Image (cartoon, rainbow, N blue to C red; front, side, top):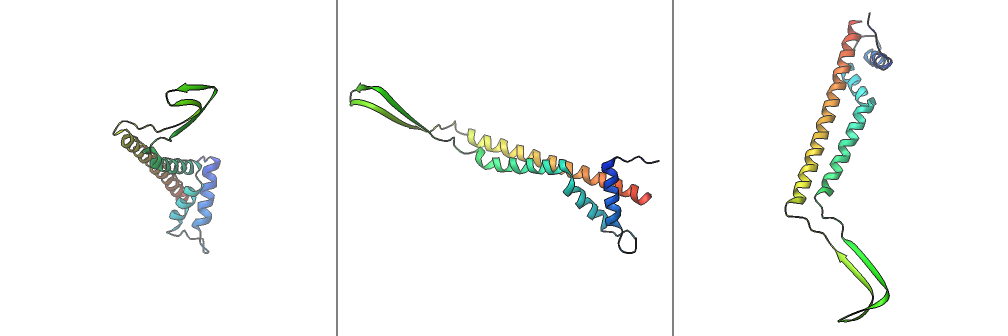
Length: 141
């Protein structure tokens, strides 16, 4: 006797509906349709794909210079300097990292995005294997 979880049962029934054309005969494209349907409905695969897209978006900003910093100081009392009295000061600064640090950050982010893409491919293959396993159970039944 074959025990199926609710999720597997729903997938088997959906595959059965897709698999039967008007005459009730399974079509050769039905397995591909079931795979496509399962990949579109799998939450884990959707989450992994969104994580990969987010990592891809971070690659562009990983090698960029940090944002410049703007500072403003207002003195309660005038400060005497050699160029005269100062009531306020405005400063703009830009941090510049060591040579090679930005390219290393970009490479690191690219590798992280590639690793996340490999997780997506692995999740896709797991879904494909589950669907094929269920498909063969359905054909056997």
